[in-house]
Length: 75
Image 1 (cartoon, helix red, strand yellow):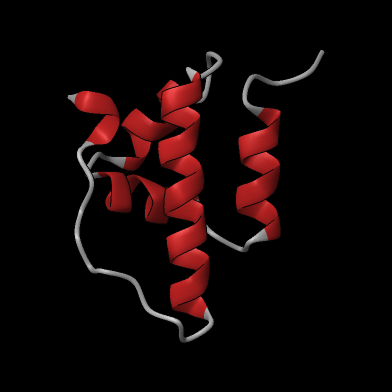
Image 2 (tube, one colour):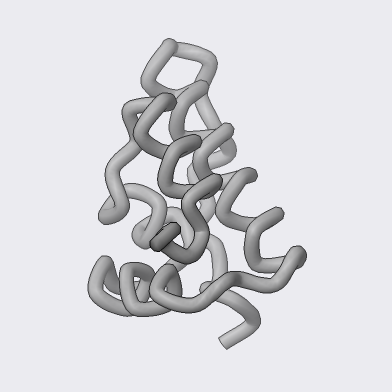
């Protein structure tokens, strides 16, 4: 059985970005983010998560980010 959002999980792992970091960037708690991953995200939600992974990965490599928290999934 393949986990929902396996692509997102793999991208985060490959970028060495933790779920709590993505959740913080999106403006929600880690538990909320992890619960959202249980079911397949919409394309819009995936785009937001991918942006978070990209920004956080850049920050780890010294490229920085804009420092703003993101509202989680339109909530």
